[in-house]
Image 1: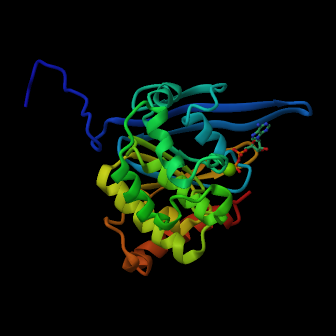
Image 2: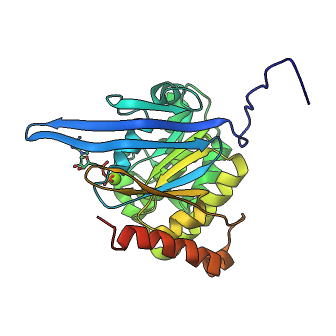
Image 3: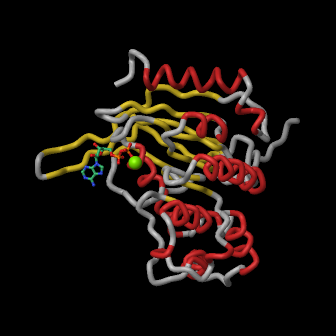
Length: 270
Ligand SMILES: Nc1ncnc2c1ncn2[C@@H]1O[C@H](COP(=O)(O)OP(=O)(O)O)[C@@H](O)[C@H]1O
Ligand SMILES: [Mg+2]
């Protein structure tokens, strides 16, 4: 239909509204023993509401990409935007939920206190029922009054994921969020994350070491290679949602997992 007015950019999730745009990202760390090029030539785009995973060998720059997009590292060349704004602006507007390896729980606050923190930082009233709901979801209702030092590594990781999700962020950045969990809990958390993502469709970027986890959750999987870190391949995951335990056994699922394994561990792998 012809119209003389410009098409409004949709503000709801989905469509082709810009989610994440990274162009020619390069990151050099200046260290005492010389310059380390952590990333070079990294370009990718996500639409709003996409779920994309990054997988690649240790040291290939995955966390560096996440820190740039989280607005925690602003010294880089190239461009990076989230929902049309700088990562720093999105972070300062409290629109991003982050669970990073180093985003530790505050040791002097209880688990509940840690989950309430994002509201306090954003200057909002704590939504107690949402906090309760997330505590329940990650299986920590009975540990609401515990301090982080009283939890196992896996429990702390679950608390950190709950904290990232509590304010239903527009953007979700997860850096190896499930690494400390046992296989059974990890799979349960994968399906819980899928449900949460389906409910509010935040633009989500997740780093993982698990190819099946990446394939299960993502629209696309970015495979990185190292020295210097760059994008080796991008895989579409053409599997309908919701994905279930059945999906994990399907030939389609195994085909995508195998293709990504070949790139990561095959002859061409670094
Ligand atoms: N603060 C830093 N100073 C110097 N080098 C760093 C720093 N952070 C990361 N690096 C280097 O950058 C590269 C990428 O690191 P990182 O993004 O943490 O990789 P990954 O998350 O894929 O394991 C590595 O070679 C690492 O040693
Ligand atoms: Mg890392």
